[in-house]
Length: 313
Image (tube, rainbow, N blue to C red; front, side, top):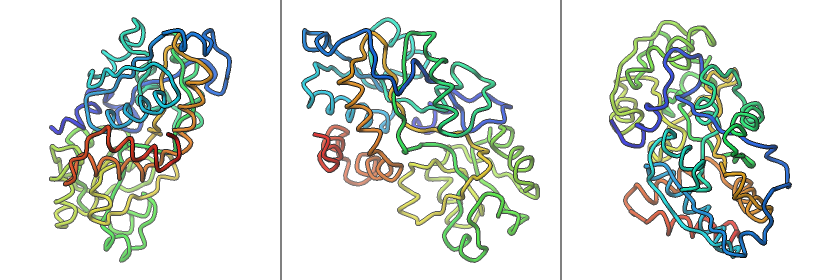
């Protein structure tokens, strides 16, 4: 199992009619500028420790947060590759870390496994109260999302006028390749039938969670549809098409900063919100490709270049 996908599988709540394995995020009003801390607290020596999950995309995002705050004169440290939320949330509570890039849907599911919110706005709103119980807060979420998606080849999309998930009825019967749990999860085969009425599907389990084997099966036409994550560099490299999801079968998974209340300042909030205002899914694909692809750039280098390009440092 690909380590990038392990973090999702570890969060999966089987049988929910939700999007990919989700985990919760929230806090006080993310638009609020109020804080128990002042900017002077940071200036006087309070250190912000930025954490990350144990996979490359999260480390890249952690580097972006770290470098942006450092450029603002905030005293910062890094503590990356920590592990799943069962480790990162306690670390935020005990002060081992103060800030981490999160995924709004996965974060909400961590706090509420039966949540019904699907859109970015609704998930973000629910997170405010959800994370407040742990004295945490979320800030503005980014447009950027990393979540499951129904994907087809460009040829299949063009030949059959496929734009949305529901359009898959035009190619029934077909084979769909995805991780083994996809056959039972609410956003997988059951949700495809219940939400979009697409039922004549042969499910083909593939163990790599949207990785190279899944991509190869799709490109080779061993399967006609595949579950591939929206920041996979293969989407660009293989010119694949992500089908739109107008019924929000798959809940939002926007990148969102999660910070401890006692570490928050207006200065930090403004810096992180500026990042979220610029960060797109396409940016994440390009950043991952630089780090995980042939270039093998460091997360730090990729983050520096992105921040510089966006005028944030």
